[in-house]
Image: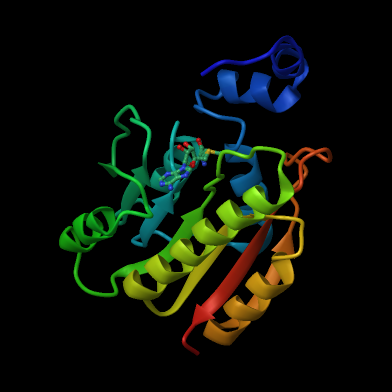
Length: 203
Ligand SMILES: C[S@@+](CC[C@H](N)C(=O)[O-])C[C@H]1O[C@@H](n2cnc3c(N)ncnc32)[C@H](O)[C@@H]1O
């Protein structure tokens, strides 16, 4: 992937990047998940977890540790990801129905306790195009979650500030018992991203 000079400079200075290297995590994104987990206790041993938009795999590494013993992580990304022990990886686009069929073929119906989605579309800087891409992915994450999640299960979904976030919150509130907003410290202030944690599917 092509990166510019200021991106490189920011990475070199970033304390989360340094800690991730030391702790053998593949991405600084892991600290966003960790912070939310410490606050909200997302994981339990034995859980089935689906990670959408998983590459390069920081969230998977964290989830695979937290659900031991007995749990399972299935991870999907349209980019290839190096193998992680305890994680089954599917190379595919979540917008493609074949990818979701593949995922469903690996588990029983409604098997997942938790879906985590750090999916980010390629943003163009053109507001309407970006909002359409964010919406398309969010709809797909929610549809996929509805197909695979157990009653009472949870969804953590990344989204972006903008006119769609209110609609997303209402949509999640209609399907889950409780929806909260999280902006972990590891998520840069300059980034419009934040997370919604929807708990208690179908309750
Ligand atoms: C911010 S990264 C995820 C980082 C990951 N949570 C980690 O800890 O390493 C977002 C990922 O979403 C993936 N992605 C974006 N759109 C996708 C789609 N339609 N289907 C599958 N993966 C997608 C990208 O390829 C990228 O790897």
